[in-house]
Structure formats: structure tokens, C-alpha cells
Amino acid sequence: MITGKNLIAGSWEQTVQSSIFHTVNPKTNQALPTAFQEATSDQIDTAVAAAEVSFETYASTSFEERATFLQTIQEELQSHQQFILETYQEESALPEGRAQGEFQRTLAQIQRFIELLQKGSLAEIKIHTQGPDFRKMNYPIGPIAVFGASNFPLAFSTAGGDTISALAAGCPVVVKAHPFHAGTSELVADCIAKALVKCNLPQGIFSHLGGQSHKIGSLLVSHPKIKGVGFTGSFSGGKALYDLAQKRKEPIPVFAEMGSINPIFIFENKLKTDFSLAETLAQSVTMGTGQFCTNPGLIVVCDPSGTHDLAAEISQHTSELSLPPMAHDSIQKKFDLQIDELKSEGKLKSVYSSGNCSAVVGSIDAKEFIKNKKLSEEVFGPFTLVVNCLSVSQMLEVAMALEGQLTATLLGEKEDNRDLKMLLSKLQSKVGRILFEGVPTGVAVTEAMQHGGPFPASTDSRFTSVGTDAIYRWLRPVAFQDCPNELLPDALKNENPLGILRNVDGNLTTAAL
Image (cartoon, rainbow, N blue to C red; front, top):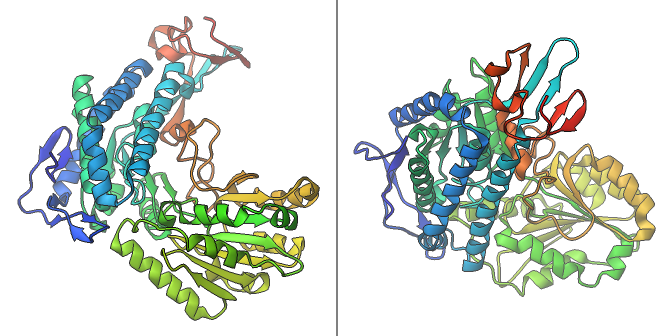
């Protein structure tokens, strides 16, 4: 049962004076019955204070204990899967296949961090025994505020990558749920709360706050006991939280993934030989109704003869698709406004609006694109802009005109390798992940994944929000010098009781000292 209450350190609290809000079914645009309560400033303070109190205890738990906790969250999610997925579909209007896929991905993400904890590699042990005895390992930074994303009710929300990586690191978490899927978030939060009880861990390790106002996020990020922030969303939202965090007496890291236009660069040989290219691009642009942070919002084409109208070809394929509605009417309205503004600019060569779905494909010459910075801003939704280049040198100019991106895709043939290498050298300073096959839509949860890029794609390009390396956002190194063995953390003790791989005087070993 969904209550609409806020979870404050193990207690679902009713607040009579709190303002309320409802989630909306995007298919009907009708409000759903549950009244959700806005978290109050007192509840925020109580949740964060409880997180701080529980931090020392939780930070000292073993990797095995945290792995068991994450495994218990998995089990609770699985036991409540049906109700979670029903609510997910009702609040998002996304199809059952997408709901099932995201649920399984959420479980898989948790499993990755369980395995990481079991290996113990997150500690990154370094021991130096020559001269003074130095032993260094990673330690959690403290309570973390996590903001749920609008477009992924599960994988980037309450038990998503930010929350699970922080919990795996040993950091308590206070989640600010996204109001578009508050019911789904509450059900998932209840699973985490139940897992804490089953594992006999302090309830202050996790709290879950609801609300529509920006005030809740501001109070969380400004709270002196919060030590880090995870955010996935718009540039304006992420930048506002980042600026707020830097104004604190104690500035804290804000790891914000803020979107991207994810350019795809297509060389002439690829354009001529890949006859399914337009269809592939159409499917990528419209996947999830374009509500992916890796959606290809820019397609840069080298067409010296000017004979290919790739924009028209993509639009032909999108017109054959039927898309679910966007996650919320407010997202649709912003999308429509951005498209109207682009059209009114009068700089686009052409704009194709599909008849059967809301996808829009624009076309423009490279020179005009380079002159107009506004055209390189993200349009969140099923939109892409095809930039037509007459030469590889023009493609390079377009690449250099771009700001930081999450991804870039280079599509060419073997005979294009020389030019591909030139383009690659330009893009490495601007992009977090570079693809040479397929399309950028979607991410893989692996150790080698990089989901983050230079500003404005994210606030810190050194880190990823997807994959097991996401844990390093919530850890900091602590060194012990000439510390008695009995006082050292288990990971650093001579006997290596955890049996983990350690760097000892430059050599990787699991042996005792």
C-alpha cells in the first residue's frame, strides 16, 4: 500500500500541516488518487541528523555486512516486484517491457556492487613498508543527498546507481524522490527500510523525502551534515545545486549528470554503404520518447555532393512509429516550446515533424550551425538536428564548436581511419564516452563504463555515475603512518584477514606481511 508519507529514519511520518501533491498518469493526464506529503524542514533536519548519527557505525561495517545489506535490498525488491512495476507503468506510461527491463537493470546494478564489496577492491589498499610505514585505504565521506531522476523511475532513482553506490561505500543516504513517480519511489524506499531491519542496521542509514518544491533540495544541499550530492537531470537543476553547495561554509562535491546532445559523426563512406542507417538513427532518437540523457540530439554528416537528405530519411522512419507520451505534461510543454523557438529562429534549413508521433528532425548547414550557439543546446525529447558538412574539415570545425558531452559516436569505414583519428583527437577533450559502432542510447553497467563528461555534461568529468566506479565519488583516501597493527582497519592489517588484493611496495598481492 502506498501511503504518501515520508520515511524518516525508519518511520513513515504523517504531517498534517504539510502541503500535498499527486502523481499523474501521462496517458490520461489525470491525477492518481494517493496524496503525497511535501517533506517539511523539520523532517529534512531529522533525516539528515539521523544519517550523521548512523554514519560512524555504518562506515565501520565490513564489506561482507554491506554486501549482505545490498543483497537483502535485492530480495525485497524482487518480493514486491509486481506492485512496483504496476505503479511504475501507471505513473510513467512506459510499456511493460521497458518497466521489466529497468527493474532487471536495477537488480543487476545492485549485484555489481555486491560483487565489488566481496572483492574488496574499492578500498584500493596501498602499503609502503620501506622507511616509515604508510598504509592507505579509501574511507566513506559521510551522509549523501540523492535526487531521483524524472526519466528513470528505478535505475536512476530511489535504489538507483547513486543510492546503491553510496550505500556500498558506507555512506548513509537521504533520497529526494522525483515527484513524477512518487509512488514507485515510496515502494522502493520501503524495500530498503525493510532490508535495514532484517540486517539489524541503524535506521538512520536511509531516509526518503517527497515533494515538488525546490526548497527541499536547497535545504538538503545546504545542510551542514550532508557531505556529497548525487543528481541526474537538467542543466539548470544540476548547476543550481552545484552553486548552492559551493556557497556553503564547507563546500561539498555535487556529482551532477546534466545531459548532452551526444553528437554522431557520419563519414561519407558510411553514408553511402549503410542502407539501414536512417532507420537505426530514427529508433535511437525516439527510444523512450527521446527521454534519455544519451539521446543523439545532433547528427553531423559529411556529404560533399550534397545529395543525401538524411534528415528527411530519418523523419520518414519516425513517422512510422507510435511513441508513448512523455513522462509528464510539463516535459512535453517544454519540448514543444523549445521546438517552436528553434523554428522561429529561421536558421534551420528544414524541420520535419512526424505525423504519427511527436518526433522532430531538423536540418542545417555546418556554417550556420557553428554561428548559432543556441542550436547546440539540449532539447530533451525526441528531437535531433542533422548538420550537413561539405568536407571532413567542416566536421572538425563542428566538433570544436561543441561543449562537453557525455558521448560522441564516430561512424566510418576502414578507409576513413586517418580522418577518424583526427576527429578522435579533437573529441577526447570534450567527451566522456566515444563509440565507433551503433548508437549512444543507453548505458552498460560495467567496470569500464564512463557516464559523465566535461562541463556542462557533468560537474566533474573525472567520475562516472554508471558502473562500479561510481562508488569512488563517495570515498576519500585516509593514510595511517606507523600505526600499531592491532589498531589498523582489517583491510590494512599485516595478516590481511579479508584476503583482498593489496599493493604492497609496488606489488599486487593477497599475501600476509
